[in-house]
Image 1: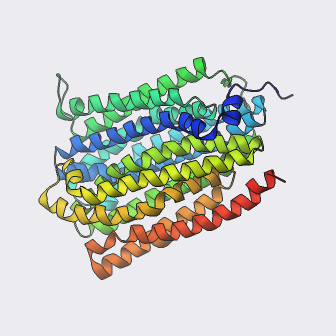
Image 2: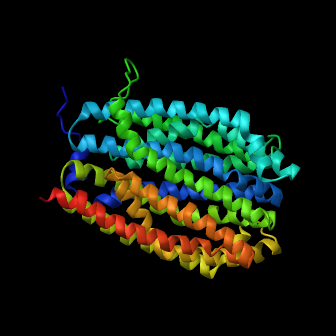
Image 3: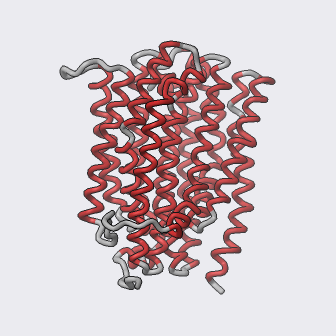
Length: 456
């Protein structure tokens, strides 16, 4: 028998004025994700002080790191959407079961990452380059990140549980603390300060996983002590095929969609390293820099998804439409600021990473061309979150597949053959244009099928 006691979050997500609600839900996540972006940049900034090969090695690890994050956050999106919908429908028992299933699925994911780190780290680098120093740096970095990924795994999942009940303030604390610890430990571990041995690239990895582990411990504590809407316990746990299906009906498309970014990055690295390893380093630096633009929008998404899912479960279509509209306006505004920065001060941004003259010569036009895609990207990101929160994750998947695999990579390959390195970067705005058209069509379809029917 379902517990019909209304959760405390109902008044907040079902009644609070939407702009204020979205700000309340998203602002802590935006702040914490900006801190995350900061420590990503600081990480590479310190590594770049060693040499360019060290920066390249860390950049080449991005596809694997992104794959791990994709699996965890994709599963988290599924947990978030199903749990928030259960709360909106006042099905508290099902919400608890969703949370417990999410924890078990996270543990299984970590075991997979552990095995990848132990057995495939060196192979992953030798496939991409024969430079012995890059392979050595990268293998040690990747092994540490994978073997100790239980911190990241638990941190992401338990933060999603907090987000599902509207407690985003606590996720700001956990993410912020993890990032600050990483920033503090980076120079200490990399350069051997305060009596620690000089560990170089491996030190950057140790700093990262240490911050993640401490953040995970805090996220678990917050859920057990502060998240009263959920009762988390694995005692007497029983698998439910229906709940797993509910999580992954949204989660798998999200996982695949995010994982496609790993395939795209791996492919782009292969295209770019054929010209010079410096081009690969530039691409890696771009991803670090663009996180300052995209992370706030992802924070906005994390606030939007439970709002849309909750109000869909509560059959409040007007609140869904208003939340989406406000989110699109905010996302486009953030993207325009990012576009201005990449157009006006690209060389100063590259100098953060101790860029050589050659790296600056390649990087300045690259940043200016890629950032043109920002004109459309904000709308596309919000649209994909709407699809996911309404249970149409496959639409997000199609947008991502077509953008990154059907358009971007083939376009980059052809442009490299025809126009050389300087032409490759145009593949990004071209792909974003295709993505925008698809999002407009799919958003109309979703509105007609899901949101409009709530009003009938």
